[in-house]
Length: 118
Image (cartoon, rainbow, N blue to C red; front, side, top):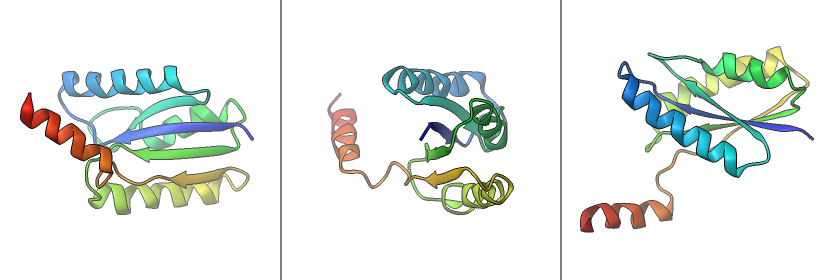
């Protein structure tokens, strides 16, 4: 089954912030066999729907949506799910999955310790 990945974040009015996210997406894309695309909830483009449509041009059958949010707030727990549910109905032959937010992953503790020490 062909799979695509969409990394989605809040988005910012600041280009520099969005560029940091795009750099992250690019690095993940280089590490993965699947196509990895960015998406934003607001303030920037592409939107989740746009990235999904781009993946569907490649006959993707499964799309994994990964919220790049530290904590499970409103966007990560409600808004993304609503968008995915709508697309799931629209594209019935495509399987959608939503992953968890970054916290409370154990590796985050090491990153915070490193930031404290350095």
